Length: 380
Ligand code: MG
Image 1: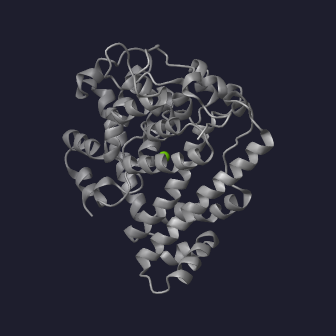
Image 2: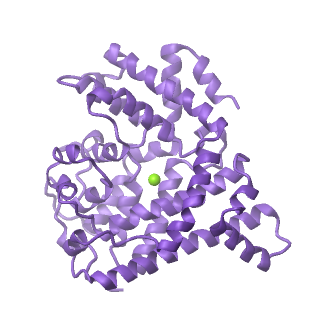
Image 3: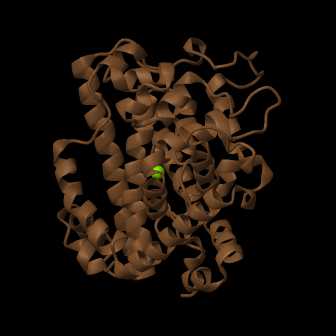
């Protein structure tokens, strides 16, 4: 199927920071996708928390499976809207590369540690990973990805940080949007975690089905499933309900985006950039999602058991940070040697900690502080 006029096109890429000859058999965006998949940071996502700590059960989502779900949803939407599927996939697979261990608790803790030293933000960190921290090519640091993939990875950014980022930062200063592929990956992220966090929440027993079914948007789909499969056990019925819900979100996103596209009629990627956000949900779905988000927030992300674990995890991050800052030689040589210049020690330590998997952070904490906290965290 032909690409839409507002789609990114490999032939029109703004290119890579360091020009490279084309690779036979793959487009520039397919090559970006391959580089992301082969990166060390991508493999580490397997052992990083989404909501539940990695050792709490083998069936919960991790950052890796989350990223794969995002990519699969985003590609479906990209096909339906006739935009560049490979670029959408590359952005989706890379979007969480900068996540710390222990999910959002880890990021909050690291941001707190870095308060006086420029802060820490996982989205900006994803960019650091692919432009600097991956060291696997002979002639450059990072993955030397194309401009469009980098633009998509950097979802949001403060104006202060944007000023330091050159061409990549320009759109934040000019208040422009990224291309449609990036906008799709961004919203597909929300669809993916809404669906799978409910699933993981129910599976863990922390979230009660009754509470979820009090949300009108969910109840609607539950009633449909019950009408069709009256005898189905609760587990399968709730999975079927989630399937319906995710499908509704995807269709709504495609429908709403098509409507906005027909209003604004962008004839190129640059016109997409200058238009208001084009990818989105309808007002009805936005409204419907609100109580669901607040339920997930209150009953799952802020569940006492999750909070207790996350507080311990934050302690691990904070204590590791202080320990490495006090004694950089506790870090492997390639990290400790980079620690020169203003704020450079703290930034180097933050990079090192952000790259850790949950279990590696716990092992390091155990090595430096003894087994107490690490054991408490891994006991169920
Ligand atoms: Mg995500």
